[in-house]
Length: 382
Image (cartoon, rainbow, N blue to C red; front, top):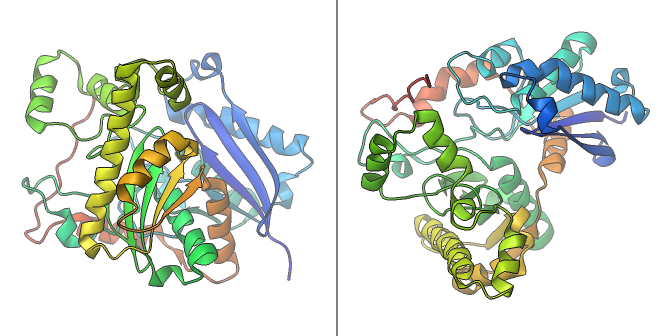
């Protein structure tokens, strides 16, 4: 059996994480950092395409990996429609959707899909995204809110949370993932909690509706938020920047770095202690919330993501939730490994490659409630 050589692309706002796997073995990885001066030359994400592609190709060449030697590519996706978990083929239809003009919050990860598509056009290799940001398998009863135009939906950290749940099922429980129930908390710059039952993410607490995080506000009083939006004098874009990037620990303590906050606490800063414990307290509450839909019958609670390296944080949370189920600390982010493993399963015929066009046809049905009320569409940013 020939060895697959898979290029993995995970592009963020100021970095391009790339790796090459031969089957399931990493043979090369690098995080390419992009300076503020480099990024300031571009007016939007799409203008960065040629720059990012060139930097990535040069890194491969420098490490003696000819682009022509690649047999497949897998990228983290951009702001995609509501979709099932797993692999989705990158085609022109997907690229057109990711680069649509009405998406005013384009994420740099879409550039990875564009680079993979260029590789496909030149070399004909199979390409896909895996466990996309828009993966949404929430059960209908969990979608209902008091405003029909604003149903709940899932967005965000599917890639890492699902990978850790599969790993825990395999290596710790020695059971098929499809026979397990997990609550997985992704703890990073943004924080979300996922409930996986029988292989499906049936409910969640998204990073804008529950706990706050190092840089995001989480759930707040809707009355006070409405008042703030109408009286602050800020534009829609400015409000979103505040809620999504300059809230949480950053707003309270002037830093998004959990290590710095813990040093402040060790130095006797009582306010920092209250804020940090407040974040841990809210995370634990949301983990408890996710135990309710399965009547507390949970195999494991998993704490993962970058700040789960913190013993102060994981001890606090574990002390509050370990009565629900044993807690596994699976610190760090395993997005590159998850992308590679998913792509390899598709290449080996162990997993189906899904078609974006077919998914798009059913996307509205995936998040529409029974009365057919269309979800509210965010107005265009002026």
